[in-house]
Amino acid sequence: AFSKISTGELESEGGVATRVANAKSVLAECKAQAPKTDSKLQAVPGMRTPFKKDLYEAALVQAQLIIADLELLIIALHGHKKKHTLTHTHQDASQKAGEAFQEAKGKSQEQQWSRLLIERKAWAQLDQDLQHTIKNSFGVCLAVLNHDSEEPLDSVHVDTLRKTSNLVTLEGLPEFYAEVSEAAKKEVDDDKGSDVTSSPRTRILLAVNALALATQHSAEIAAKSFEHMLYF
Image 1: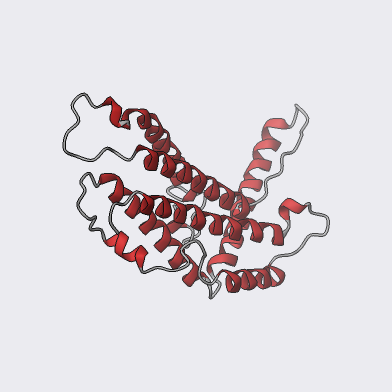
Image 2: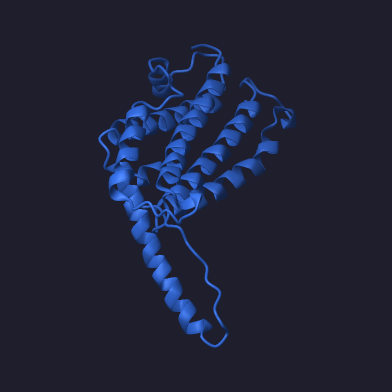
């Protein structure tokens, strides 16, 4: 889902919103399987080490938070929609026309807000760091969950994270925020009559905060995984 941010695909088919919906479905299935992972349910325990149920459940909690971060990002970048109350006589035709107009306006605003983010110089560094953290945090978690012996764990994700510093902080975040704030002043008309939810600064703050939170929640998955490693 995060890879689609750079292409500006938020609510289009196959975009961020679609992938968030798929992630919710997968997460629900994973939660349903959690009770079945208890090692006490094994009729005949073998030589393998018990499945790390507490790590599995902790990762699901953080995954739920990351999904919420993505939903926050969509809210921040998607065009503000307004609902209109119409008389019954002209409701059908006028409502359809109004909805079509609002949808087109929303897509235009969505593209505008996405551009404010991804066209900044600091975006490439920030996006790379975000993708790196998410990929390796989930990678090391899967490696630890699949590791069922007392032998040292050999994983490229583990090696990568051991060499990474400040995992919970997005690289280039201060510079990125400064750039998008300045761009918002130049490119977005600040309607004085608009409410706080449609304010450029509010939307920028929400979007940047969502990315920072997603990084922190991913890093928490990595931290929990290292706690369950016998050797590292």
